[in-house]
Length: 255
Image 1 (cartoon, rainbow, N blue to C red):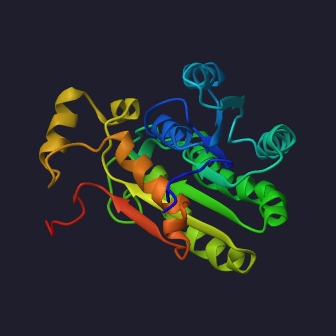
Image 2 (image 1 turned 45 degrees about the vertical axis):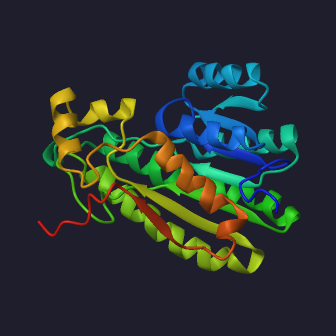
């Protein structure tokens, strides 16, 4: 029986792949045969990840892009197409979420949050459509969040609004693109142990959060990568317009 998680011959683009969840996603696809392109604002960090993986024999490369810039996104996808000739899986993982009390959210903070987390998803998917259509299929995956669609967290109203919008995009884009064999799905992480957790507080805060998770720990980046690999694979060929909650059971308690 063929390996259902073999991505040999596939090209995967991962935004925000230089650290944390994004790096785990990059590694997960690369280890399973995909050619992976990391698109990141931190080009130096992305190049370092790509270099590490290439040294182990995995075809990974990096591209710099500011995902708040629609024109830059379009140019980046065009360059990717010239480099690789195809795109099979688009993973929008990059996120922006400075912890900011509601009364202190500025237009600049709100605009960049919506631009990176939500608007970029539109421009990435639109730019990828020509390649998906030539291939007769495509897969769009998004790192959403339980914050916004399911729960709330103090200081993240801007982020919550963007992720609620992401889930709306997933459902509606999936419906519109289904006739072209393009699937759109997402993962809703709970609290995951990444460098970005520093936005939420110090080590004691993170320890307190972990104690409240029913499974007794913070999630690992690989927990999210595993869900992404499943949704990108043929095992999920009949799944579209859905999000998979990966939160250790955090959203289960009633109080």
